[in-house]
Length: 186
Image (cartoon, rainbow, N blue to C red; front, side, top):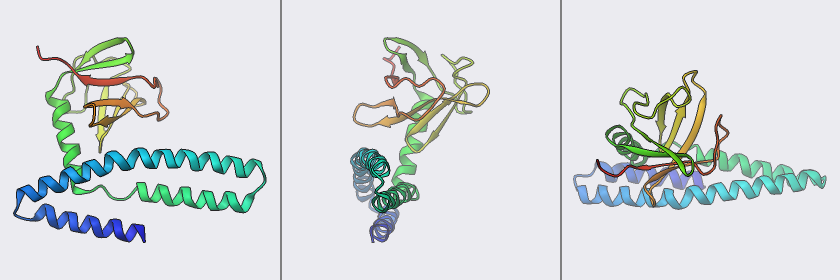
């Protein structure tokens, strides 16, 4: 039922974006971004708590309960993998432009930092190194790879603070405190 409602909302959204009224499109985009800011942390917390509950039930030998929790985890994973909406695609496009045109300070072991710039061809220009050679943006997730193509850092864009923050995914050089913020103008 929730999947149906999300699909229905997505259809309404696509229709609204295609409408001639640009104000409606901006309002819908703003709504979609706000919904994502609220929904993603909520889903992450829910997933973490479900995983803890799954462990508890498994250790206690409550297999029926563990199966129920596992099914809910799978449903949540499916919900999170729903197709990217038009607003999320436009957000990715805006973030890509921001990365290519901007200058950033990368705090990799705060207070240690360095200036970084990103090229349109997926390479890191200024501040790049063997360990920070290429970059890729998927939705609002920025991934930084070494020259061998291994994931060095993975960060999510936080619109509230206008920064990219380490998202906790397993990487080569994971520092939960790493973040990327706009550099002051020259």
